[in-house]
Image 1 (cartoon, rainbow, N blue to C red):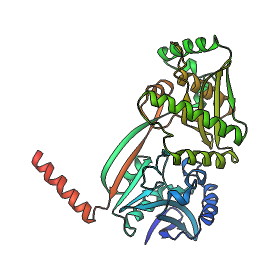
Image 2 (image 1 turned 90 degrees about the vertical axis):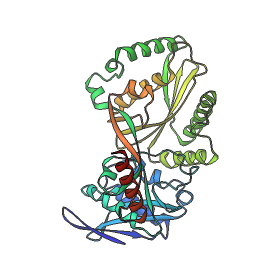
Image 3 (image 1 turned 135 degrees about the vertical axis):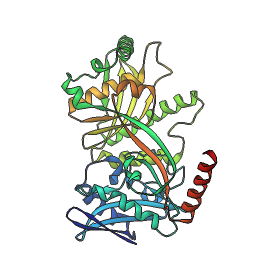
Image 4 (image 1 turned 180 degrees about the vertical axis):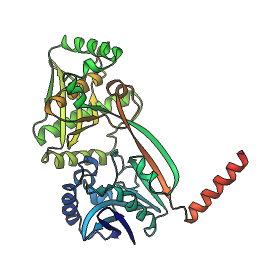
Length: 360
């Protein structure tokens, strides 16, 4: 399966490659990372975490130019679908992914849609699932969209906060400033508000356990399971923290008010971007005006400003606290695609044509 594509300096060939050894793929992936724009969710730290379990029927697509690898995409084949960066098993896919996409060398980003078009021609693949990708990626593939969901992903421009004086609070709306000032005063009555960074892998794993306990208690109160409901997802994040700690790509934070724990933040970081991935907050112990989520993120954002990071990513979702803290937002889409020329494509297009005629 090959797909010649011309990108600037010369032709690029896209082909499916067999995977004989995940350790060898890791070496190739890490080498390509050095030539790519940094993105945590496309790094081998994330993609390669428990890779043999998460990709039981893997498909590797490679883009090459002049004999050099310029793009890689790891997918899994599951019940007639190919899934980018996912397995197709809901339990194995419970670690939520966004910023998803092929890993592309700088200057070859335009090859990404061609790389994924090749996935639709892979043996046994009737549909392609892309979760948490930039909207322009599927839009540029020319494939038939069977399903599409769009979610906002608010983020904070830390350079703008830095230019405004280095404190996020004065940049927020009057209502959010009032809520936060009340919250901070209430917490301060228990003692100084302090932020503690897990300085070792052992401390990070201990913080994760406490975060999970608070997270699960909070979601049980809502009658839901929360993000750490399965044994697999807990093992995934334990392994991820072990992998990321040595590379400085994970930040577990504890926020205290005196001897009270306000909450924990589980942040992932690469290339100056902090991803606020999960939180465990003591909502049950919060007093009337105390806002543990807003308060924890405020302290974490101001710390990130001081440390020179460029963006604080609140991740996809329309929760109110995200809109309260962030003025910038991008979009990610979750789509399922098929080839227009496939049998399924013909059936869907014909059905849509008939429905359109009936409505007309």
